[in-house]
Amino acid sequence: MASAGGQGNSVSRWWGRRMRSDNARGYALLSPTFFSVLLMMALPLIAVFVLSFWTQKGFKIDTAFTTANYETFLNYSEKPIYLTLTLRSLEMSLTATIVVLLLAFPMAYFLAFRVTKRKVLWLILITVPFWTSYLLRVFSWKLILGYDGVINTGLKSLGLIDEPLTFLLYNKLAVTITLAHSWVAFAVLPIYVSLEKIDRSLLEAAADLGDSPFRRFWRVTFPLALPGLISAGLLVFIPTVGDYVTPSLVGGTDGIMIGSIIQTLFGKVNNAPLGAATSVMMMTIVTLLVCLFLGGVQVLKKLSARV
Amino acid sequence: MRMRGLPLFVYAILFLVFIYVPVLLLPLFSLNDGQYVAFPIKALTFKWYGEMFDASQLQRALMNSVKVGIAVAIVSTLFGMLASLSFTRYKLRAKTALNGFILLPLVIPSIILGIALLVILRQFLDASLSLWTVGAAHVLICTPFAMLVLIARLEGFDRSLEEASLDLGENRFMTFFRVTLPLALPGVVSSVLISFTTSFDEFVLAFFLSSSEPTLPLYIYGQLRFPQKLPQVLALGSCIIAVSFILIAFAEWYRRRGLATTPAKA
Image (cartoon, rainbow over all chains, first blue to last red):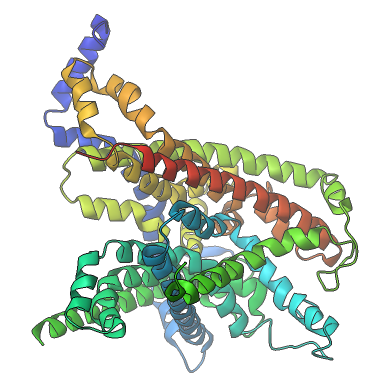
């Protein structure tokens, strides 16, 4: 403002001296957010890493360095629970992720290629449920799949079954369905964005050059949608491996995941260092899998470019 | 709708049914005059809604959630605004890495974030847990959402308006308040509402980081153990879903409408 007083000017001169370049001003603007994430995420994660090399002795923590917790985690013959549950969590998350991608792709395709009017309305309809209480949505599945739940009582009152179906709740299937339902809306958006970006003239060219709609889909649409599918897959897979709410509400003993164990170790069992080691192992395994997967995608890309 | 598009259209409708049925089930059975969530539905009643509001613990939990939610909405939007301004208005080195770093809390399972904060607070700092610790954790997961919404908005309008303001002698600070902020308003409103709802509905972080003062999702989780409380939980859940729906639908509509009406970049 032209009428800014002398004080304002001296402040801005001081500011100008501090911020010689435009870049410095950019970094200064970013720093509160950056340091808050550093303080509240990076530092605590380092703390978990440090804690995982300590041991719980009664109510005290022994801070002598040891890899005992990792040995417990990896000791399959005596303590099979950790590796078993890690593998089971990976399996259930992966299944849920694949189900989510299969369900989300046609929806994203419909949004990108078929919806011409009221696109915003469709997008809002799909995204809104994702934002509403995760806890309540999972709880709702418990009510649907339960012994006296919606499906069983519904089928009974229609006269289709006499005895309630027991395979619905408290198993891996229930966890997979619930996870898929919770995340499917989230996966539609990245796929939709990548489909929407596809240059329509490429599709016309493929059709003009004699590709059938089916071949055109596999040779043009699908490869170009792949980045969206990959990011959607990762956005679903990574958080679901550590999910705690879903297995605890609909999983029963069959559907326990690694997140449930981590919670118990920090809670009832009161062995925070072992819980920390379990968390570190879970994160490491997930990160390795993601890197392997992305590396594999790169290799495939290079191979297909050479052919 | 051409015939070719019909199967996909049917699929899209079924998809909507699949994602909406579990959400709409709670309101449906909250009006049922029976202790159980089971067919056939007996009679319509609003009594569970009346009984729900009698619980003083519930009112306390509701107040806690609202307090945390408002604080989280303001702080996350502020952090999101600062970050998105620096990403869209300046050429930063390592921009992708910095951006990824701030978005990281979105992909880390919340149980890991929860225990990590618990570990540093309890084992290393010996701090006590409170609504403040819950709020801090919520800021961590809401900031990425706020930043994404605001970046989309700030990239969407004409930079020359800001340049004009600077050329005409306005300083950067006032340019932000008189040009950037009014134009970014739909993004700001959307960011505030999304952050509030995310915090209001969040369970896992609150589960690990709260003390004796529960937030609303924690209160509900506690009530799930008592079958006789189920109807009241359904009534409460329906209210929460309704509020979340209205806030988010408004936020999304306002934001996307805003994107559609802004003059495109030159």
